[in-house]
Image 1 (cartoon, rainbow, N blue to C red):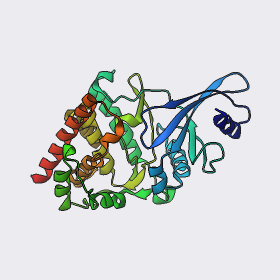
Image 2: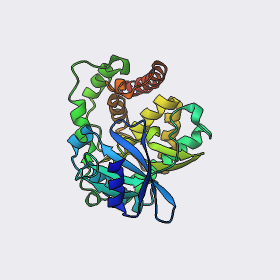
Image 3: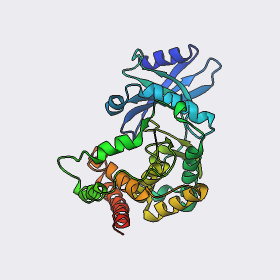
Image 4: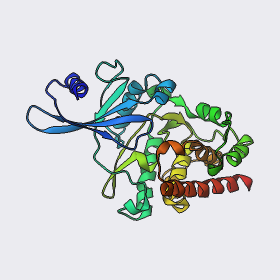
Length: 305
């Protein structure tokens, strides 16, 4: 508690600590909700993100770069958290951290959670992604972002010693071997890098925030589209992925989907060997594996045609 009190004092000496609550569900970072009281008695809640070792190995300045990116996205009027400060000194809490406003909402990752028709849900997800990809950013706006194709090419070319049979990894890698890299069909844009329902917050039936930008990159917008398709298929079924794709393409009629088959396969590969890290019970693991199998089968059929 004392560390968070010191952090608040650094942000604003008038803030006093009320409570601290660690948020569950994160894999790559530890996120804590910090409730603070202002001198006038009003309260605010801050989200404190402490980055995991994997993020810091790939980018030791993850906190500073995510802060800068959120500032850029807010200027574009995108529904992302308001960044407040970052700290790489480790003086208040161990390691680099980012402080942003806390977004009150719910992540919808199962059909039973839906409060609106599925097509409205996927439509709002598609609208946000289209707006992100249409934002007029240049390379100079975010020079700290990695190039997704470089990281993806390394993953595709570095198979593990033991492949994940349950997630079709051998077949996916075999199919990718002759189809990588994908066609360079669209101008590069800023990508979320991990756009899926678990990183989106809703209030009722309204999308209010898109979170977790530490995997942001620059690349073909179809890469983000493919990842979202894969995640929607896992969580809501392949029909949801199909609806989402049509809605996104309607908002971006000039998008070239020549690279989609390869990016779909790459998206399917991303979870290989990782599900054991998620702490799932048997029923949830089987549900997600079933959705992944449906998506991977469709992707493999598409490249076989």
